[in-house]
Image (cartoon, rainbow, N blue to C red):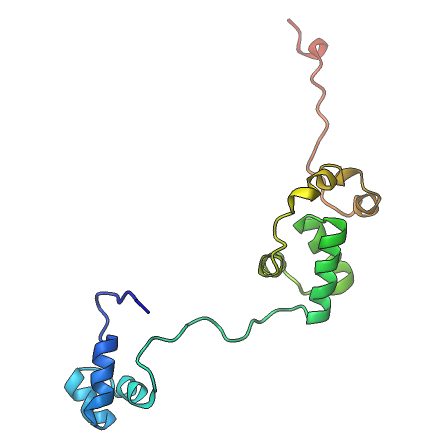
Length: 154
């Protein structure tokens, strides 16, 4: 496995192997290799000399696995956009869910984008009876503007 070491790294895989093979105590190894005692102890204790992932071992989400399944089923069957899905999730499933958390869930499950077949359904989503039920609760940003030529004058 080829890894890129940043220029200011105190220990490289080669130096880490030397620390392991030296047979020194953590205090002596820290002095010889000019590293902290805790770093020396860490590399003496480990079986390998490669860096480990810094990614979290557990994902902290507000939705349970059952709630996630419901949200994914809603997305798949109704082709709901993210904001509408967020509204329904907050109202009926879990009030603590965030938009970014919901977006991460959809991305993790490969449902962040609609598939090609659903373009026809998405195009006519605004005429859906489900959206009509929630229409009075969703924010409206469109305003009607009258641009007749009579009101402008020549």
